[in-house]
Amino acid sequence: MTFNANSKPTLLILAAGMGSRYGGLKQVDSVGPSGEAIIDYSIFDAMRAGFGKVVFVIRKDIEAAFKEKISSRWEGKIAVEHVFQQPESAVPARLLPEVKREKPWGTAHAVLVAAEYIREPFAVINADDYYGIEAYRKMADFLNAQCTPGLFSMMGYVLGRTLSDHGTVSRGVCKMDADNYLTTVTERHKIRRENSGILFTDENGADVSLPESSLVSMNFWGFHPSIFKVIEEDFIKYVDKNLDNPKSEFYIPTVINRMIDEEGLKLLVIPNDDQWYGVTYREDKPIVENAILKMIETGLYPTSIWT
Picture 1: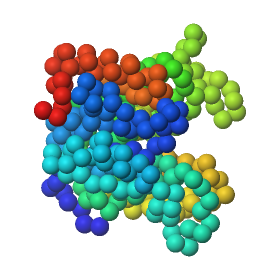
Picture 2: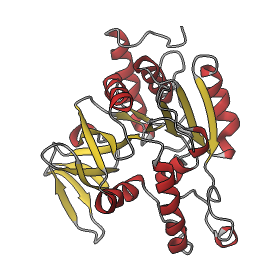
Picture 3: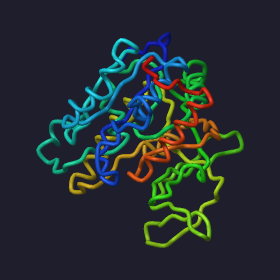
């Protein structure tokens, strides 16, 4: 792979999720007054921050709906590419006959399938998360000036500002050294706020407390394109070990933690105090709609980002 050190950074959007808790294609559901989805505000903010291309990771079964609602509105405004994440994507040919699963392999797998389309430093985000314009500016600055094969980054959000009022969520809880370099990121599940504070349920079914101010990953990463080779090698090993586990997930933090432990990777956690918004559950949608309207009233966004 030949890397392009002079290109604007690329935005890689993971949009192949099933939306089972939401009850539909939340990737394309409108939250703005002119039909904008959260993903549209992400692209709008990324363009303002200096990103030059967007790559969508989607499933084949949502291709038509996704292109009609999202992609077609951005063509001509920014370079656009699409790539499919399917259970068989990037699986070595020798293992394909043994793959027995209906869903793709997780977030690190989603990054891997985009390798063909990215030659420059890039950011990774979720399609259904609103991150805020400052996050894109900070990330673009990092990708343009600091990103190397040995130095990646991640936007860190305050846990208490990333919860849903309508159900539990999963978050990557970060531990850092004194210079804000990541030491570990641990995926915690069934996180929710209760009267006693913020809790998650561990692998033994026990409830464990988390500090309100914990920095967490919202899957907003800054990578050098050299990571594709690393993910590919790790993925082959992962598939070999998990062929009989159709629910296994090959997460980005799985790769990052190993690179930190075994390869000396440095990953800078960039704090972001902005309020996160997302649509994990359908009941979250009115909250996001109201937040967008308030940001329009303050001048952060135009009434229609298409004009």
